[in-house]
Image (cartoon, rainbow, N blue to C red):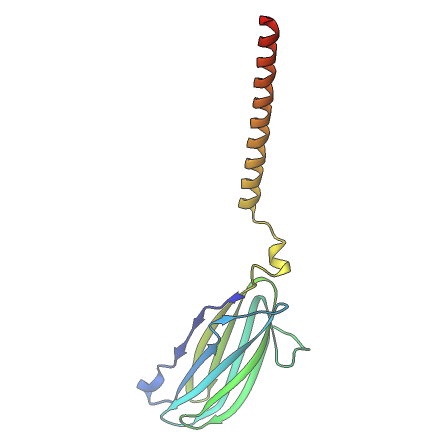
Length: 173
């Protein structure tokens, strides 16, 4: 299971009399199967006017790759939504693949008469997947080595102690 942190933003351009766009992503936690999952992007025009020539752009970094069909993968996708009427909502589905352990995706919605708004997603490969579980953290390695060395020293001490007791018994007889 991937951890997905979502930040949602609504344009604050209403003070200027411009149209307000809103963008968010779902789900809050992305379940990856074979390192692939689907993210839904919701874009809405909150008004007061038509959002002209609206675009949604996605940029991926780290392990994240994007696709609309599951065959062609890349780091950038752009959707043209055209003119969005007031109270209109558009849902986009994007396939996300993670070829490592950590990545992020920035989603930006903009139009000719609205300031850009953004949402971000942090993608992390599940710890129970094959590629992530094969990487043993250095702290686990150090702890394991310390325990093994302690057991070796304990074994050496016990063998020496036993041998000393045997020598004492032989001397007393």
